[in-house]
Image 1 (cartoon, rainbow, N blue to C red):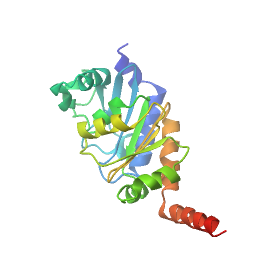
Image 2 (cartoon, rainbow, N blue to C red; image 1 turned 120 degrees about the vertical axis):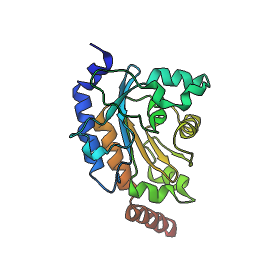
Image 3 (spheres, helix red, strand yellow; image 1 turned 60 degrees about the horizontal axis):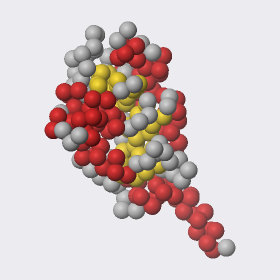
Image 4 (tube, rainbow, N blue to C red; image 1 turned 180 degrees about the horizontal axis):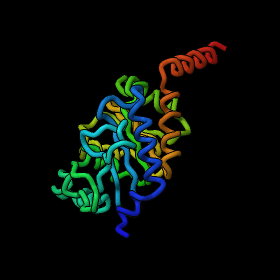
Amino acid sequence: MNPFLELRNSAEFARLRTASAELGKNPLQVQGPGGNTSLKKNGRMWIKASGTWLAEANERDIMVPVDADRFCVALNAGSESAEDTASFLASVEGAPALHSSIETSVHAILGTPVVLHTHCVATIAVAARTDAEEIVRHRLAGLDAVFIPYFKPGLDLARGILERITAKTKVLILGNHGLVATGDTVKEALQRIYEVSCLLEPVAIARGRNQTLTGRDR
């Protein structure tokens, strides 16, 4: 069987669609057609198409196939072809005739099978602050999280991420942009989305700072 079709017919792909719809229907995570999700295996990737809504993931065919390995080869070689992620769309029977997301490059370079990207309100409230990196370091300690300063979405962002992550990185806080959680499974990545969202809630941050001040007073 075509490896793209095999991946699309897998139970994990069904779980990705369900998680995508769940996030897409939560306005604290995704607004309108924002955010994107993906699943990859052996260099083949399915990712949310540009302009589609995650909320409709269980009702419409919103995922398109991308040759992630071929894209990464082009990116690492400095090829101009990497500028056009649409050129890495794979020809797969039954795939929707849609364009890949502008964030395709970000999903392709991350080594885990599952990547979930949302515009989490609590995360953006932190990511827009001048002390965002410090907050991320303290609030998300132990979660293998990295703060990424703002880069233009697309290749600039992908390159900025590659310069800052390690093999252990599991969570990205994108400056003025949003949240990226990775995982070996959809369940794992989704749990990270919600854990980070809770830890970055303004009330949680304020409570943490009050506890720190109390400890200093002692």
